[in-house]
Length: 466
Ligand code: NAD
Image 1 (cartoon, rainbow, N blue to C red):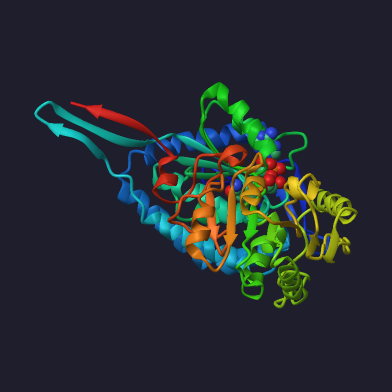
Image 2 (cartoon, rainbow, N blue to C red):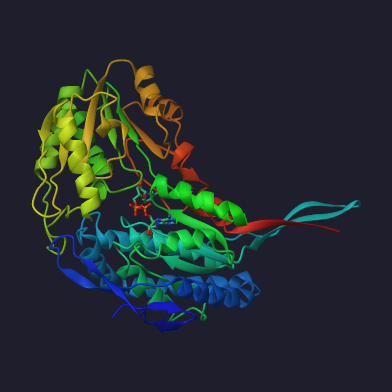
């Protein structure tokens, strides 16, 4: 039974909604449908807990965060099994066990961070200090692609800096987060972490949270369209915002790249989590000298990737997560097929299974190239001139990540710096790590997560002068 946790107590709701296993279509369990009153109660509980938590020394809050990391680690396998059943991703490979392992690593690293008081001036004219103060109640809104990892990204830095949290997962994948909050409440004081879930039909909890006067910050990970709505409604109460939104990352293969050597990295850079990844390669620009060879090696690699039910140990890619996304990818692929050459895949499978699809000979202007497909379909575009390829990569409303693939690291480094993106990689993609800030430029978001820069986003500055 999955319930809300508000003020440390399990709260049952009047109505529930089914959560479906994307591999089979069968219900996994029912999730609670929270009301606007539940949100008010959760915010009140979090406000009460904030008074206590924010007054505690940083070292005490660090101990709480360490206890969260340990609890998460102890329950990693249970949560991974649940995640596969509701999200569809495989247990192995870059799937649920990987996601839980990453969540533990991120939680542990965040525990090592600190925001000490900074002395700006200390002389015979006086002392000026910069203090970092917690904000209050943080509203966390998460998507369905990496539900538990993203929950940890939001919750641990918030608590370490002295904030309390109301978290609301996506209606497609609420169960792992509800269980996570239940587990964390075994080690946290009541009200520090509260959960809400809902089907977004009668009540849109995310919209209510964005406008709620008791919430001082929203940390949101999701689509650009929803992120813009969050920003608009948060403005009335001047909430602090971290928005991690969509992307349309380009990978650019230079003429000196070794097609065989890069195939695996490019493939997983694009198809990690079935392409349902914010910073995955969503369009691949390949120099004409290596174009045919890169296409061939990518297809060779893709042929060896097993697609199936994520609960089977040998599966490398599961089904797509939901019908809405499946239909979108089907539409984009049907359109791209008539404009390019299908190298592999190209036809939707049974249920929510969609085989890894690579379509070559496409150009900018085709929807699969210009839009965020967020699924297992990679467009390949041939280029001749590197300046033109960089210009095309940058000609996008988004700016999350980008990558250059080459044997010449220094040359690739210089080109990567010309990408208008929050992250730029050489010979890898979506290589995020807990000590390196991550965030988007342009339409991909606002603010950063991870590391000290990410931690600062859960605080306001107070300058003290005496
Ligand atoms: P989504 O925007 O549909 O939903 C995200 C969350 O917002 C869900 O919890 C949803 O219930 C909630 N929501 C719905 N309406 C809302 C409203 N009006 N106000 C506030 N919240 C509302 O996104 P999704 O489909 O779950 O996730 C996919 C998207 O997320 C992709 O675009 C992807 O690129 C992006 N994403 C970005 C990052 C990143 O770090 N930049 C990471 C993962 C996913």
